Length: 121
Image (cartoon, rainbow, N blue to C red; front, side, top):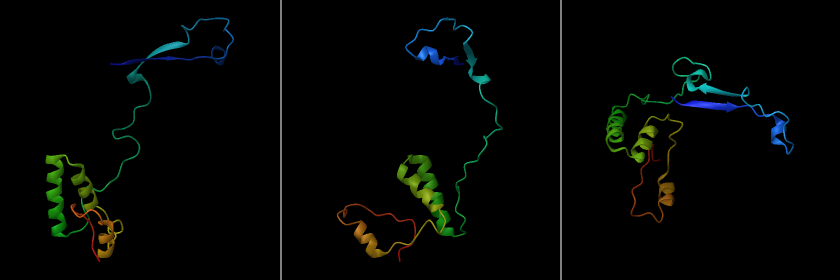
């Protein structure tokens, strides 16, 4: 268990003047890590919310989620994790992409594969 030492320093000691009394023993205290702060209920104050599954009933989307959950768990690939997160997104956050825009984005990147989570219009 780590213990921390906290010392309270007066402003006089920070200036160029020498302090008159150098008794620091009553100003320094040892604190154990458990004694500091307050105990919150399990989970803290604010819950972090994010989707863990798609809201859609689309069976093909659910199959993709099943596949990418497996890939994230087994490979540890950041790309697969991002793709899985985007599969959970709402319809508003998956705007359609036109084919002409996709061509413009992929100019000069002919040897790479483009991945889009959304619709192509």
